[in-house]
Amino acid sequence: MSNAFRSLSNLNYRLWFGGAVISNIGTWLQRTAQDWIVIAELSDKNASAVGLVVFLQFAPQILLLPVTGWAADRMDRRKLLFITQCLMATLALILGILVLSGHVELWQVCACAFALGCVAAFDAPARHAFVSDLVSEKELSNAVGLNSVSFNSARLVGPAIAGILIALIGTGWVFMINVLSFIPLLVALHLFKSRLPKIETDNSKKTPDVAKFLDGFRYIWQHREMAVILVMSFLICSLGMNFSVYLSAMTVHVFQGHADQYGFLISMMAIGSISGALVTASRRSSPTFRFMIYVAAMFAVSCLLVAISTSFWAFAVLLILLGLSLQLFTTSTASYMQVATEKRYRGRVMAVVLATAMGSTALGAPLVGWIADFFGARWAIGVGSISGVLAALLGFWFLRQQANTKRVDPL
Image (cartoon, rainbow, N blue to C red; front, side, top):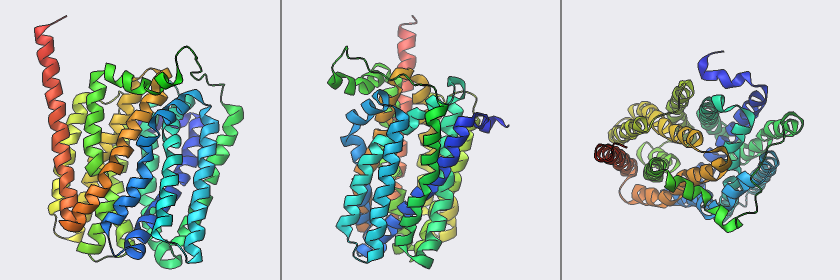
């Protein structure tokens, strides 16, 4: 087996990977259908409405951060994931019924998005930390990269299929198909009950639970390089990760397209994302801090090129570069943080990392939507370039400070 796929030699990880691929495709079917019904049917082609839904879906990553990180370390992750997956399937079913009944309204989509965000806030850190229960420390960096391959392969296939299905059978049935996509992962989680050894969780009562909530923050603050990476992630994700907002705005306002064009653009971006995930998975060592600085600069350049592209096809092709740079940064961040963190703190640290990425995306979504509505969709992409420049400059400044400190105090 090639180096990039070496974690798949682990049977437990193969079960997880197979179920996750199908589940992730369903997730992207729903995301595409949800964004499209909001901008095309439930609002007057308003990008700010999409930004609001994105905000509600990802804001719980910040609001529930202390509890979600604690739960990922204190609870049985397999059981926690089984519960969250069942709840997300139920929410997809509710949304599907609302759409098929013909009585769906924007506030109902917003309510479902917020509820889904609350459940996903518990699911995400547990899902990332659960990988370390399936593979050895030696395989962990590769497994993290393959997780991103799974997610972004689904992002390549899912939106393209969703665009076609929306035109053929409508958004309601797309939500229903997503309900079925949860079954393989639930089956895999059930099989793990007898396959995995008992995983020790941090059940210590020596310190108050409130103090434990803050352990992820404390751990990152004590490792300043990790803290700088977290700030860089906030800058890039807040303005650059809101592709559902600016791509939907570009589709309806600039290119006067439909759901199939929107799905195609997301799929083009996913081609780059898959490439980025494969590059990360192929690395034998964890990404370095300097590597992430270069990737942040690459992201800034790619955002600028996408923003100024004039034709639909040039725009679509350049999205591959944007997806590549964005995925290299986010996957490298997750890999670096997991490998650099002691295992007993990993759930809480990953909760902080994921909350920063998803929470900053939520905070930036209304701003990106407002920029798209009042200044144009291209400007909504252009601000992502500014965030990449700021992130790269911060990283270079930190390296310079570290170099100066070593010269002053060689010990």
